[in-house]
Amino acid sequence: MFAEPEFWVAVGFVILMGVFVYVGVHRTVLTALDHRSQRIKTELDDARRLKEEAAKLLAEYKARHATAEREAQDIITAAKAEAERIAAEAKTKMEDFVARRTKTAESKIALAEAQAIADVRSAAASAAVAAASTILSQSVKGEVADDLLAKGIAEVRAKLN
Image (cartoon, rainbow, N blue to C red; front, side, top):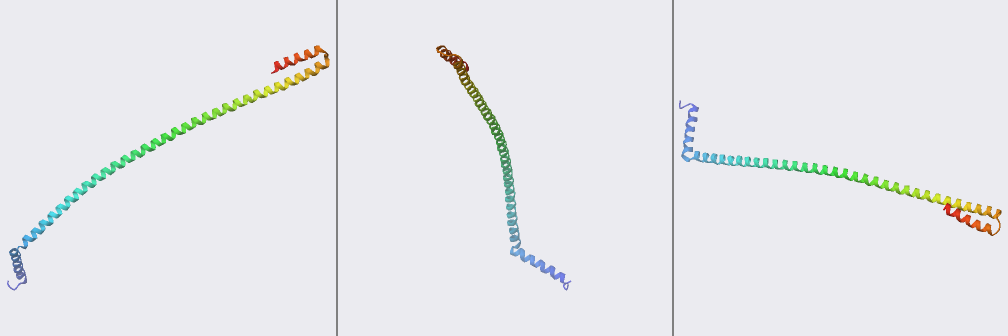
């Protein structure tokens, strides 16, 4: 029994454990383990707190993102409405401008027509007066002819102008 190596290993182990207990290694090991367990617990609590803060920040950023998205959509909608309003306004102004230009052109045309008619009438009156003057001067002579000629010319001018 004393010759077997397992016996001496067991005796050495018991002696080693006795020395550890006498020196207080078990208290040092337990204290170190307690400190380590406390440090791990603190780290876990910090990690849990950081995780909660990260979750809050994530929720806050998601809310901000959603708000920004809504605002961007509102801006786009407002810009489209403004563009449509401006286009409709421009169309109305263009139609009004074209109508005014058309009216101005029509009135200029009417004025030119009236002027042309007046010019033609004036030319016709002058030609008629000249023709009547020539005919009357050749057919009627004397003072009566001059009076008749003056009256006729005045009447023709009054009627044609």
